[in-house]
Image 1: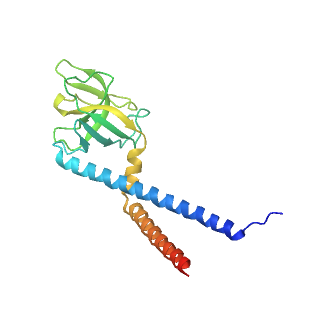
Image 2 (image 1 turned 90 degrees about the vertical axis):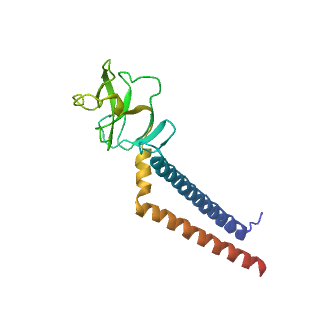
Image 3 (image 1 turned 45 degrees about the vertical axis):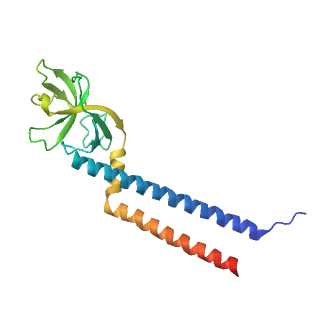
Length: 191
């Protein structure tokens, strides 16, 4: 009959728990690092870009706030908008444009008609009627080239102070606990 060392089994179980805690701490650390870097990118690029929108080079990263473009875009999606270069906006494309000449807020809708002078008629996919008036070419920010579902919702959730503070507090507590456990383990090895 084979004898088992129960102390060894117990220590293996403790090791698995330690691995899980370490993995969790690394995941939280990674999420915090990515979050800080993305915030830094968004903040600094919005300050540096002439249009005060977050983005790099010809791309802008924007949050979808309403359901006017459902089902194509959902509130909480993150969209990537590419500035037009030599190409011109065409009917069927989804474009982001300044709501008015004051450049205070933007709208992202589909082009339904384009006049020869470049003025655009737009409409949200979920809206019954076209947008009022025509959008001047100088108000067009660019065309949507990518959508990342739900990313803006997650980003805004992580920006809430309570969530961010909870993640930081959990990371600190986990670090302190790990250091104490390591110290206890080393003390046990010395005796």
